[in-house]
Amino acid sequence: MNRKVIAHLMGLILLMEAAFMLPAVLLALYDRDVPVVQSFLLAMALMAAAAGLLLWWGQKRQRNFYAQEGFATVGLSWIVMSVFGCLPFVFSGQIPSFVDALFEVVSGFTTTGASILPDVEALSRGLLYWRSFTHWLGGMGMLVFLLAIVPQGSGAGYSMHLLRAESPGPSVGKLTPKLGTTAKMLYLIYIALTVLCCLFLLLGGMPLFDSVCTAFGTAGTGGFGIRGDSLAGYSPYLQNVVTVFMALFGVNFSIYYLLLIREFKVALLDEELRLYAGLMLGSVALISWNILPLFGSLREAVHHAAFQVSSIMTTSGFSTVDFNIWPPFSKAILLGLMFIGASAGSTGGGIKCVRILLLMKELRRNIQQALHPRSVRLVRVNDRGMNEQVIQSLNAYMAAYLLLFGVSFILISLDEFSLETNFSAVAACFNNIGPGFDAVGPMVNFSGYSIPSKLILAADMLLGRLEIFPILTLFSRYTWDRSK
Image (cartoon, rainbow, N blue to C red; front, side, top):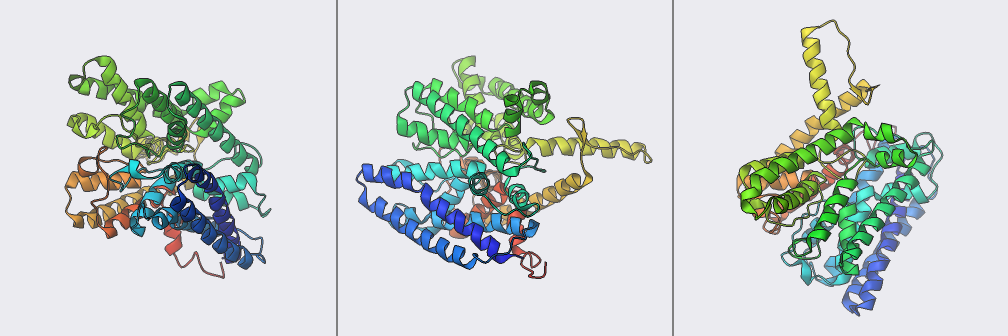
């Protein structure tokens, strides 16, 4: 275990996080909000001091970097980012409880959007901006950003181990021969789509501050709103813009790269993309039919069904209506979409469409082999045979997912909320959705849970965003074995 290289990378991450707080400081200065300015500056000073110590300790680091360093760096970085990122809320007194502030910022960085705030509009604009910006930072990942802008070690697999540990999906590939270039390309696409979303919101008459914060939440598929009613108070045009862009950010970013290099046929025939689009369109049709009696017209029913399906499937968590009062059939579909989630390689959460696709194909293969024991069959996606190691990793992921989900559900049930509330709360946090049903529905929040339950749900958010293993490896003695 090369601990000094981990310390060096974490120091760089903390410096970047402090730098990313500057726009919030400038906004608070513009608003003459002195206590918030002081809170941010104190947090940034502490981050700079911690970063200095880590960089000093890691200055004589060796260049060897393997999978265990990659997983440990990612897991520790996200925890440390969250701990320091919540300090402005605590220091300002606007979220005085450290656990509540930590829950809010973990929810931001993991693009979950679950909140403990009973009155979000009471926050100052500087803190609202930082709260929304954490979505944007967490959407693509801070370590991917680090790979894009800072030259790192030249050892074999250095960048790949970081990218593999932080990027969502069962496997990670390179868009270009160099991983640094791949990271730059991902962020350029991410920035371009974010700016485009913001421009469309501005064209619809949304104020600049609202547009920027909403674009951050849409791009990161996070769902933190700056109003108590999420997006319900905005015009149908603005809601439609968010519907479309949530769906776009739930697409694997490699599809956009294929479109940029004019590989249109390969992009449009992608099996995961077709499953993603099919599930989304089919769910909109079924829910529209089911909720039609609740609305005045088919157009209005389709409008709200499309928004909520796009929001839930991409794990954004925005809302335009209280879907908690929809019929059980519609709620069951939304609950299923919470687990399926968006595409691998997107900013969305959930199990991911490609894993669902692989599970269905593996099930079909097992049935065929049961009927023809001597046959040898490969699981194929996009006409490519999948490595058996990917299938084994998928099975291990699903086993860990079900085990951790069950344990979390049992533990938070000590708070004696309803079964629907507790189950959907864990589903919403583990899959990085945001709102659940019943007492944690779209028009309420998670403030009623006890401190232990909030910490469990915050851990679920991190486990879900990092897809379990980077966090679990932190508790393995093999990770920290100096001889490995």
